[in-house]
Image (cartoon, rainbow, N blue to C red):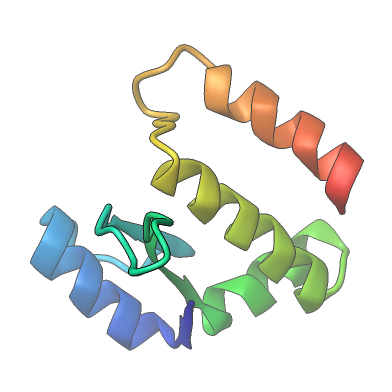
Length: 101
C-alpha cells in the first residue's frame, strides 16, 4: 500500500484511468502467483491529503478514513466494481465496516 499526496494520485489517475483529477483511493490488480502458492492481489494507493480532508468532513479520525479507504481498495482488488454492480460492493463494504472497523 502506498500513501501519497493529491498530486501523485492525480498523476496515476490520469495515466491509468484517463481521469485528470485527484481521488481518494486507486487499486491496481496484479494476480501473480507467489512462490508459496498465494496470489498477489495487487497494489492500493491512497491520497493522504484527500483522506485527511474527507475525515474532517465526515467527523471521524484520519486513521478511520484510511481504514475505510483500504477496505474499499481491497474490495476492488477482489473484483468488486461499485460503478457497475448495482450497489453490491457498497452493501458489502458497509457490512464489513460494521464488522471490522
